[in-house]
Image (cartoon, rainbow over all chains, first blue to last red):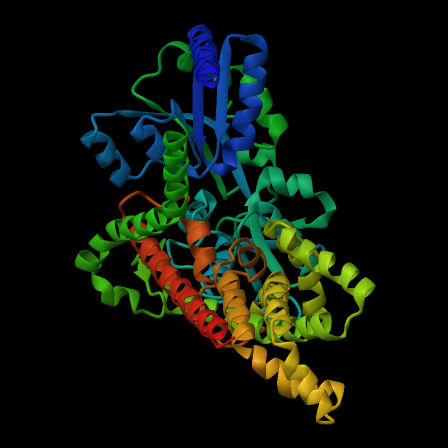
Length: 284
Length: 290
């Protein structure tokens, strides 16, 4: 009998503790942010800065990919979806069926840099040439004016928003060559390019800048005859660098309350300064 | 009061013992439920293709053959590396090594199983793949071989400890009879003891293969993940496990791609299930023989 009363006591204590927790939660503005792995770093920097000035806010940021984020938004498990691609018509349809209207905000810009080994003699390529490397039409560096060696093509995984963006912008929507090696992360691409003299890969501008002299960023020529533009914050913002994309927030309907306050912060000068510091490009 | 308590404890034990059966069954059910619609819409013949292009603006293709051959190639290579090291290691530890040697060897082999696969994968990416690239003068070190070497490394402890048990449980009389007949020590080991322990060793290898084929993180990191049909160990391959791990996170819920990934999972599960059943059967036979 003694043990039973002890158990009762523990249960009672548990109940009291839990009720205490839930009471606490009512005073907190809890916001969940989920989606693009490209944006997770940026979004957590925003969240940290925001929570410093808004002690009542509690923002949790998780990755998983743009598709996962949009799915979470539609399932109601996240307040804000971060996405490095536009919402697909299929997903809009799904949202309609669920009676949700996703609203889009451009919160930052991202440039995709092409990186090669520092020993690679090539310094600029046209979009068409890059496309031909990735579709498999070019397989040897000699086809691009470098010494006779095969090209080792590195790509992100097909789950990456960057994969699809690159396919659309650079490869004319053609399929990747079957020899393309799909790397699980940006750092794996940087690592491989810094070791393999024959490799070429694409990564977000911020990561390429961070990698410093380990890799060489290629200048990109949009169309034959146009100038070769090096990827940088200035060229992405000016729109002269060809391989760049917007990064989005999606909310369920027009944002209100704490979600709106967070969004306003992100779009403010202070929020956009964080974009720059994280290695991306501000919208204004 | 005591009786009542005992009943509850008994119930708890039965529940915890049978929960794994429940979990296995519900996994099969869940996989089947998510995969089934694929059989009607694009049809199962779509899986029997030679190209895996799940994300495409033109035509999405879900041919499993490159993934299957990728998994098979890596597994066969890893098994080829694992068998000699695993079995010879077990023979050495069980029959030849003396007390202190064994005391040093065994914990180190067991530590190998405790290294997280992501650490082994990172080691492979940074250390092993450049070495393999330089030895074989390849364009890149991200190959089926790199993955196989690392997987063998991960499976060897399993093979060693189970084979060692098998070798140890060979009745002492076999060894004594062989030695009494004038056979040398090595002759005794390889002509009498190892054949007698063979069912156990085979079961150990099967379990090792099961671990190799199901391992994900290492192959995702070092095999290069190019989905092409090849049996060249120096070529980059994409395995079934790596495909599921890499693509499931982003796939649109309910799409053909999503369902195809579940088929990959089902095939993988059937393979490992089959291997386990065979291993259990072999082990059982060897135990009853004893």
